[in-house]
Amino acid sequence: MIRLMEICGTHTHAIARAGLKQLLPEGVKLLSGPGCPVCVTPPEAIDALVSLARRPHLTVCTYGDMLRVPGTSPELSLLKEKARGARVEMVFSPMDALSMAERDPGQEYVFAGVGFETTAPGTLAAVKAARVKNVSNFSVFMLLRRIEPAVRALLADSESRIDGFLCPGHVAVIIGEKGFRFLPEEYRLPAVISGFEPADIWLSVKELLRQVREKDPRLVNTYTRAVSPEGNPLALALMEEMTRPDGALWRGLGYIEGSAYALNGEYAAWDAAIKFGISLPRQTAPTACRCGEVICGKIEPAGCPFFGKVCTPEAPLGPCMVSSEGSCAAAWTYRSF
View (cartoon, one colour):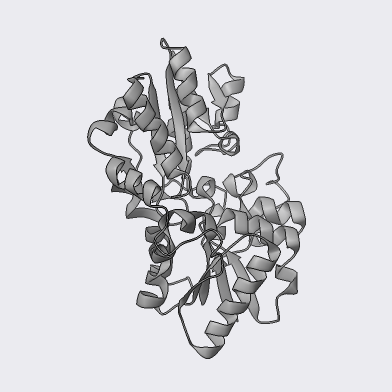
């Protein structure tokens, strides 16, 4: 069995929507990895956001797919806290949250800064704008993650067996081809940076299978219309200026050193965890949800005994059934199981 893994939530949904798994030849399996930023966020982070929302004179702002994600208890979510009277607002960008803070200086506004390298520059731009404008009632709860340490942690797991990676085009736009060279150079694994149309993905899978068959691991960029060898220099410079690597807890992967972006220097004043004295543990509490195993490729969504039974989009047990990029949501929506 040849096991290929995509590490991008947009790929996950594109593959399910186009029915590409059903077209794969016998003996080839396409797995979903830790590419959905909401899905890799541990339940303890949701608990922390709920605790912030309970504070007087404080509003938590978040992307829509974070609202319904349960914390360590099914009763803990930002949407349920909003129903209980907390101030929780859905926004489309961190700049929306910053604008709210500017208009309402008597209220604290905390943006839930979830994402990988794709969304990191936009979140950091909002922090930089807050500093320039001296908007002190705005801060970011930093949940930004780095993809490379997560992939390394996945490969270090003795239970994981992956023969090649479909690399995320969105992340690669920022970090460039160079961000994934470690896969063939250090691990001797095929890696293909792919776009998101079915033809893009099919071409990339074909290239991965060629490399596996010919034992010719290398990095190939099939998304050259968007991804350059060196990435986006302005975005990378902003990340270099404003952040430092930090350890973080991941759903399914545990605590990974150097896997998160932390605000550094003068920008740390806009870090909500520092501002409000919140710290996350290094170990996650067990929950009924098996999303952690799904995003590590250990089981498929239908392999979870709760899938489609007690865990549905209307009553999700975990983020993989909530997020628009979640593996379980994709499997359920497009019946790709």
